[in-house]
Image (tube, rainbow, N blue to C red; front, side, top):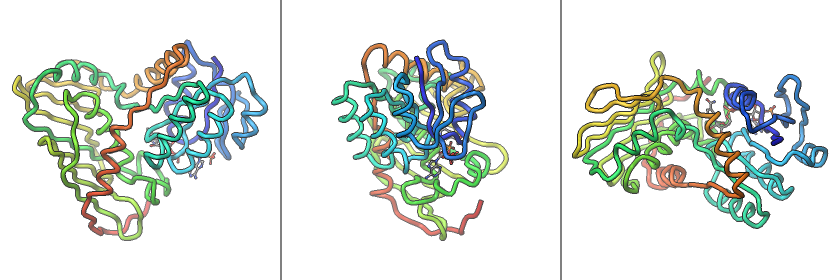
Length: 303
Ligand code: NAP
């Protein structure tokens, strides 16, 4: 099946292009980007031009930042094409509800992806936790914004989500593996004096689970979650890729390279089945953190 990739920036080149090159399902037939290009693939700078010129491309995958995503997503769905969205699926919840309604009306597939849910140990962690009782949990998601989002000023603009851009990955795993829903009780958000989105956040969920997100981590990066349950202790490390039970290695693989091939395989299944997958649970938690969170002003941040 032919697919067009839109927003040729960091994640498109790091993950989407290699995943598509190896995919048995997809042929990368065009790109849309003002500057970004993929060698050997026809390049457009405006999405409307690509949609008009290449009617045989049935699916479009958007790798734009969340703010410019909605207009492009609407154009794709109105043109009757299937649509795959990078996370977070929009700048607001209402945007994504509108896209889900439009996809249903147009009879096309919409996939709001959560790449971290495809990490190697997530399914095993979900199976282990099923039916158990969780007494407490702790998420530590500390990474270096300069390494993963070099010069990306959009991430600190209003609607860019700041540290919730990676933090929502942790929340996508949390809402996938837990045997019960969670909701936010309290939050503290740290906004750099010169920015519109938080650089760090601490969340407390009513179910005894806490989360600590920080974008200022240099050196070793930490993407861990730990749970104490009636049946023992479970930990997920390396962003859901490694599993530990009671402190001992219990599976997974220390690599993030399986996530995007798994997303594109799922998109192929959805298109063939005429189905959509849109789970907004991680984004609801982020929206609630912005609603409930206490705001602290911290040191100005420059890339
Ligand atoms: P990026 O490199 O800054 O953006 C992707 C491309 O979008 C840009 O190169 C730009 O290409 C295009 N674009 C169109 N309108 C834009 C605007 N108003 N502002 C900035 N860029 C615009 O970002 P990214 O890191 O690839 O992230 C894109 C999405 O992928 C985000 O939702 C992010 O959460 C997600 N993601 C990122 C990572 C990561 O490690 N960086 C990991 C997983 C998921 P042109 O200038 O050529 O049009």
